[in-house]
Length: 171
Image (cartoon, rainbow, N blue to C red; front, side, top):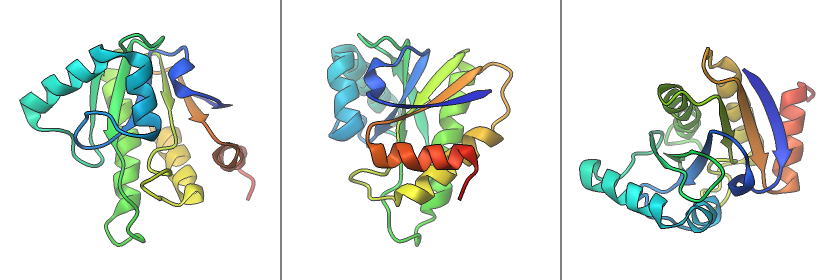
């Protein structure tokens, strides 16, 4: 699987699936979540409501998949990242599970390409440098014969620089 890095807006990516840094309610929110729901339109919210009615939301570290609505992406994979609690609540493992479970869902739906935002580094306050290490390691370690390309889409220059450093292997 090829790994790419871009700075930009995840809602504009031409990929089979984009990952949404969702909250457990799946009903939209701020940041990436709100942007995806706004850009993708009501079809995404309807699909999220159906999932909520069926299973009652989405737990931290887990992932669910919906239509991409009006997005260029065919699918949105919603994953719930951990809120940073100074490492006392297994946040690193939960964040890793966000990436792994999203990749598994992408494989299950025959996605050739997937794009990830910087999960949990906004209002959930996960330290950005640590999150970048976890994200890159989780994607690099995932072995897939279906997914051809994974892209990290960094909205802000700080995350972009951290991912660039992590992907190049320089300290």
